[in-house]
Length: 162
Image (cartoon, one colour):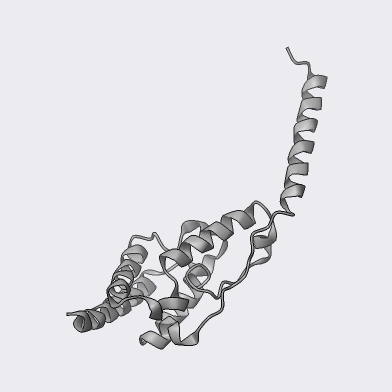
């Protein structure tokens, strides 16, 4: 059975090992950079984005769904940096407003539909993002604004597909 002195020694050793691991982890950083943007391929160059919608997208979506990510100070601290890097890469793969113009018309229509679905279901922006970026949370009115816009643009695209 452990006595109290031995237990304190083990806790100190475990604490020291964790501290060393975290210190070493700071030297293993993902490559935080934003890919170049071809302005002719952006969402704004491809479809009409009203100022109200643009403001919502800028505040709540652009960091993960474009090549214009703003990296806060805590993005340089491991292991948070690894989580953020993977999160941003996944967000860009799923939907990237910086390369919107490269998407097929069918894909654009699908993404516009998904934008409305995901904000209505409160799947986007992710709770882990709004926890730190409280201003990114969407009000019911903003959700309605995004859905009205995305549904309208989707219908315009679908008329050109058919």
